[in-house]
Length: 536
Image 1 (cartoon, one colour):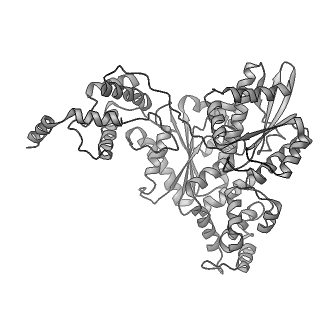
Image 2: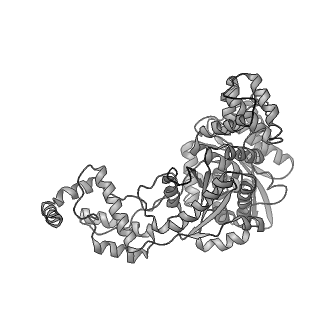
């Protein structure tokens, strides 16, 4: 009976109608995974081993709170970024309880790395993570129950909690307690916890002496947020080789040091890092012995089998027809056939990205009766305008233009300079002459608004560096709308030794794209040429 029904369905199949629908809205448009765009179809087979290893690490974290560090290896296009979305989809399906998966694009510059982690965590978790951390602190107070709101309850809680959280952690505790127990200063505490720069009067109101963008303060904040989270945090660090590719061994070494600190000082967190297989041995050798001993055995992603490609097409097309609100064709891979699947498998050699790169133009050629044309390149990176990303783009721009001018530009990672993690120091060499360039970026959330106090702190740090003769020239990146008497006064004082890059959200993203793809536009190129011409 089923065979008769299938034959009848195939006989009644109106191919022209389906082709018309496909032409209006072709399926399978993307062949790359990105950390900011969910993947709708998942074929589990290629990452089954990774799933097992990661879930094992999560079970240990849930059992004793001790962090775990699980590397995942694979060649380009094998599904490392896609693995994040597979894990994200299983957040509430894990047998031992839920977890929160946080995507962390690799910070290309080893500067303010903890702040990069903090931004990713808060963006994903939202302010609920402040609430749960405060709940944890309040729970530790046996005599302070419920949700008290009076200011004296804040003082009582603070005095008792400072015994467990002294030193740098004290400011984090103060901000979290005021967030809950001090209604008059809740918004101010929220701004501090989000990493906004506060002026002296605002810091006095909160009774804090530090700002969150300082590395040690950010690490203390991360530690408390991890500890207070209702569920384990899974930090998925994509392309952990990023600092190595951009700044060599010293850049990667510092990045690994931050990961080691999170492992050593944190609780309730599983660290998953993806890395290219052919670079992994070099990354592993850069790591110190304590870091190596903390790593779980790396697990490998496997390639697609022919059946995986077929299943991917079937699931993609099933989802497509459901979205179109139409009964699927009798052939579940339509408009593709078995020969197309075989061809994609042979050409891609089982690489998922390459299989899709072949199939997408093939579908277009079938729909429009043309020869397959190479598909346009698609960006496989996430633009997250954190300080390390913008700093790296400025450094990369100087390096790319420097090559044209016979000027070698490299990141300095040396004692006395590397310790100043808020600011990057570059070394520019031409012939026998060498100059040092300090780069600082205002820690802002919105590049279309004034940088305010954050811009002042950035230029203030640069002046301190210049006054100590740690650099010969300075670059500060701030929002275009930035003004302010203090910012301008220091800028005027540094005079020609300072270049201010005034950016908007659009121009900052354009700069990141241009340097990442090594396609600076004419204006960007001229800016970096002008900076280098001031040095030599």
